[in-house]
Image 1: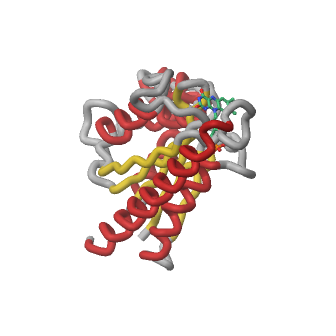
Image 2: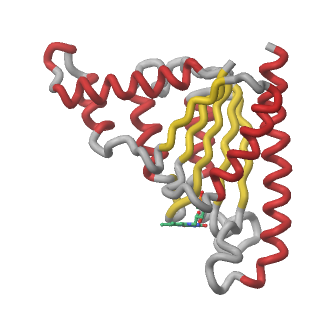
Length: 217
Ligand SMILES: Cc1cc2nc3c(=O)[nH]c(=O)nc-3n(C[C@H](O)[C@H](O)[C@H](O)COP(=O)(O)O)c2cc1C
């Protein structure tokens, strides 16, 4: 029994995505106290930006004709996918940056997709694996807010995790993490506290759900 956990925050201290991921992880651990947890910190230990192109271009060539960089990139993709495939459950803790997907998460996901087991159009090796995406954002782009629709990350991550990799996915999102941190957001103090509590409750439920699923397998 094992959990693969990926964190994409560029910081460790004070990271709210890590904190939300910790809530999910605690429930998993409560259900599986002896389970192995494999951790991947792509925000602080990123995939090189050149790896994706090297893996794609190398994949068009016979093995003997690949450069060492292409071979290394393909090997790296295989290693990343091996970790995913080996896990019984997956947890992704990913913040919103610049209205879009964390570059570190996207670089990692792009590389994973180069592996033949995870490419678009095949039944992926992860099909049916239970997973949680815990995502956070400093602002709030939900329905009815002035910048509704400016979160261009969550739908993309859902598309990859749920549709391309066919994970059995649950998503928890916490908005307004910058309230109390960034100036000018004081009027949102109460709503931010409510959103935090709601997100943590949902994270607990999702974590417990992951734990139950595997108890039943
Ligand atoms: C460089 C940078 C860009 C950010 N861009 C956005 C953004 O576009 N929208 C938003 O709501 N929050 C944005 N944030 C705020 C983060 O989403 C927020 O601080 C979140 O809590 C970061 O995750 P972490 O706490 O796990 O580090 C940004 C933060 C940083 C550092």
